[in-house]
Structure formats: structure tokens, C-alpha cells
Amino acid sequence: MTAVADEFAVRTEDLGKVYGELPAVVGLDLSVPRGTTFGFLGPNGAGKTTTISMLCTLLRPTVGRAFVAGHDVVAEPHSVRERIGLVFQETTLDLDLTAEEGLRFHAELFGIPWRVSRPKVAALLELVDLTGSRDRPVREFSGGMRRRLEIARGLLTTPQVLFLDEPTTGLDPQTRTVIWEHLHELREQHGITLFLTTHHLEEAEHCDRIAIMDGGQVEVEGSPAELKAEVGHDTVVLRTGDDAAAVRVIAERFGLDAVSGPDGVRLRVADGAAFVPAFCAEAGVPVLSATVVPPSLDDVFLHHTGRTIRAERSGPLTVNDVGRRR
Image (cartoon, rainbow, N blue to C red; front, side, top):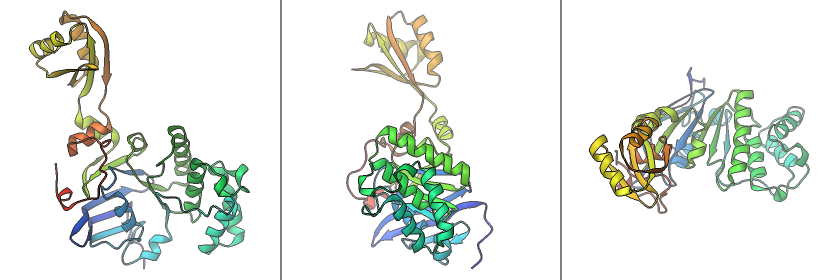
């Protein structure tokens, strides 16, 4: 079948997945422009992996439609698979093969001729900085090296869209940074669309747009800057010589609510940088230190779901979790 002319790399219309009577994904409407980095941010059990599985034709949607690279995921699954790469959350590498052998074997499975795959394998190993380890068995690789190899494998078929399910889970912060350097480089070089799921706030900051997902639904979508601007308020933490007096002054002279805790006096204000000198000038209370923290994606998640993303759910998704909008 012929691809539908579409400016979007991924587009869904009222997409949903139900297991028995348990909705896992509900009413998903997405439009992801080509050549962008798009992220699903949410805790474990939010429906992110289920969504990616539907988009990659691994799960059949219960309702709605989805198009990837202009092709319908239900009506044209083979056309979709020819145009995507996928990096699973759990490693799927053959540990007994070397890095080069694993990539060559993957190329053969996809019917890529040797004359084509040989230079491509070499170029991808260079892209992810594994050329010097091409002849080492994968079982000797660190977690970061294995993840980079999996990204290279996902690029072997020259995908238009690369799906990454929790691409840096279990990796240390330094390795996450290296992985993202490679992801940015490959997007710039190849112009592909990156579509990822994550529950790491720092990782979501790399995205052009993110959708916050919770309970099987998208609560809000936008760029990280737009979403943080919507929350709007800075968090100010003051350490003073008299916290109780500081709380009273903040309420009486500035009309703001503040609370006193172990870390000092905490309040939220539209412009924290302007508030601090004004408070110091008028309060009459010694200020020992002041910290101004702009809105974070965790604040955005809290604003839309009622809890922070750091308080991840540990149990399975329940019916009561779905159908709840805030």
C-alpha cells in the first residue's frame, strides 16, 4: 500500500488498548513532526511501553488508528517495520557474539546485502564509539556499551523513526550523558525522528516536545519550556535568623503563603529573583541564605497528576487509575 502523505512521523487518533476489562491506554491523540525528538514522560505503569508496542506493530490496538512514517500500523504492519528501528527497555543482544558479528547477523535477518551492510556496520560502530571494541564479545561490555550497540543495531535498517523504550534505564548519569550525545549526533546526521519513553526528568529535557502520561492517558503535551512556564512559579527557600517571623512577614507584607521546615522557609512566587531582595529590604529578619529554583518537569507532573514522578507506582495499573483526568 502507498504511504499517506503526512508531515508527521507518528500520528494517532483516539488510540487505545484494553486487556480484558482493564484499559491500559485511552484516547491517545498524537502528532509528532518528522525530525524531532519526542518523549513520553511518566512513571512505570503509565502506558508508555504499551503505546510504543502498538506503534511498532507488536501489539494490535483495541480502538483508534495509528500511522508511523505515513503507514497504518494495523493495515500496513510490514511497511511500518521497514521504516522503524526499536531499542527495547531490556537488552536483547546475543552476549556470545562480538559487536561486529551481532550487527552483521542482524543485517542478514533483514536481508541487507553484505556489500551494503559491511560499510554500514563499520560506520555505525564508529558513530557509537565502539570501533575499538568491534571484535570483543558483548558479554564483556559495560551497560553503557551494550546500550550504544543496541542503538547502532536499531539504525541498521536506516529507519525514519527510532523508538527507544527507557533508553538509559540502569545507567549512571555520566553514561546517560554519553548516550544522549550519540543520539543528538545521529539525529543531526540522519534527520530521523526519535520517539522515546522515560521516567527520568533529566532525559525528558533533551526532547523537543514531551507528553506527560499517567494512568493510560496523556495529561498534557508541549515543549519542556512551555510546560514549565505553564506552572509558572519559582520555589524560594530562605534560611533566616527567625523562620517563624519570616513566615509572618511574608504573609502580612507580601500576601504569600510560606511554610517553615527543616530546610528553612519555603514558598512559591512568580519571580523568585525579584522577591528575594525585596524581602531582604523589608523583612527586618536576618537572611542567612536564599535559593531560587525555577519550575521543573517534576513540578509540571505534580501540577497535572497530584504527585511527583519520583513517587513511582510499584503496582500494576488499575481500572481506577484510568479515566481519571486532572
